[in-house]
Image (tube, rainbow, N blue to C red):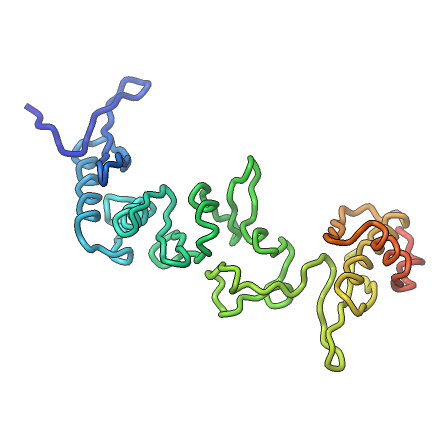
Length: 264
């Protein structure tokens, strides 16, 4: 006679085959741990989870041969230590939290971002990190003012040098706008503007970031009138009234080559 195993329950698939679910209850919360085709393997998952909750096992003690997947390992340890169960692989500290991908791969986020990342899975593709947000794949760097085309060191930098530390205090945005680069000239900061046609075309150098951003927009309009069929993204100018924008737009000078440019 088969003896029941703790933490294991049998279930049926649509095709009639049997599989085994592992689960446990801790601090009055029922937690699903996963499933397996073999009852004994499901029991191993349950035993590993129970040991994790009862003993001072650390995040870094995880090994690849554990019956538990690493994200569940993180969730259970966070629940044990902090009393909050999150399905995401998050470990909470007093003023920030870790989002883990593996024992040695993680991001550090501000506590204010906890709800956002506890309800969304971070996916990785080609060195970029995304979350599904309202049906769209959103690059998480955009939450910190870092645009898709931005270059580290030129457009933004991590103050403490760590690319894993995405706390707001660690991210400095150097260039906020398309086509604009801050440069130092004779001890003062100026803003150089370039726009890409077939190669980069100089638009001009300006005293303020706002003027530079509007100059880029003006360059887009001139190129479109010249027959350049390219999907440029204009700079969105927040906090400027339409009248002020129009005055600046008409007064800002751009390179004469743009005024003469004609598409071939």
